[in-house]
Image 1 (cartoon, rainbow, N blue to C red):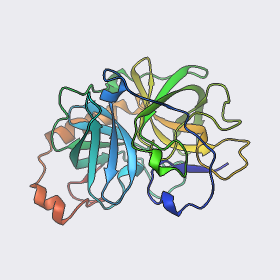
Image 2 (image 1 turned 90 degrees about the vertical axis):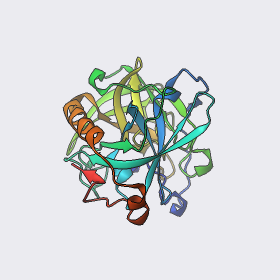
Image 3 (image 1 turned 180 degrees about the horizontal axis):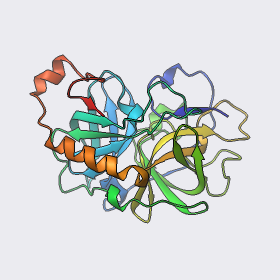
Image 4 (image 1 turned 120 degrees about the horizontal axis):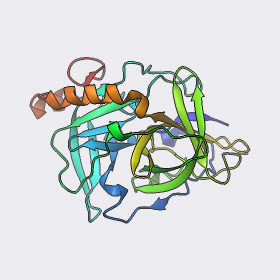
Length: 276
């Protein structure tokens, strides 16, 4: 079993075959989760997902915004046409530790992105203040723009969702909620997050539960893979106060002129791009 973060960066370099399948249904409802989930893309080719929490704010995974690159959010309108909006600032959780592995836990894997302009009335923000904890055995829903198979990048950038079940929490350097396929329970390959789903929301009854951090292959997988087994989720309710404080800071932030970001994209560890 292999545990990895779920971004698509450098996926083409992986030679290991994969049989893990997200097993998600393509979302076609213009009034559904489409209005609350976006793609987070970097100028270096990285793909993640994110949850809209305000017209100009997106909650995602911290490891999705570490590259020295320009970032944008791609949302789909009610006609499922893509709309790109530039990210102008970001904030990572202070407990996040870059470079650590999922086995040792990367700290609190959360980040906020401030957009250059509001997404508009086609989109419905999720409220982190309404986030609830879920117990073992309770059903949850995953939504994201990730691939359906680890080595199949062509299947990414399409919004899908699937039904999972909470298995409980895992405590290492920080605490994550672990979810898996309702029937297979990660014993064999089934539904779950895959490459590009990092930062995507986990929901229960339309309420935000958490965002995807990493996944693993199934326990009985015969190939080296990182999809189809367990999905680890950073619980939002435990970090609601940090999200509220940083959201307020970012909404007061006045970004420099666009030319600044064209000349010096993503000063990722200092200045106005990322704050903790």
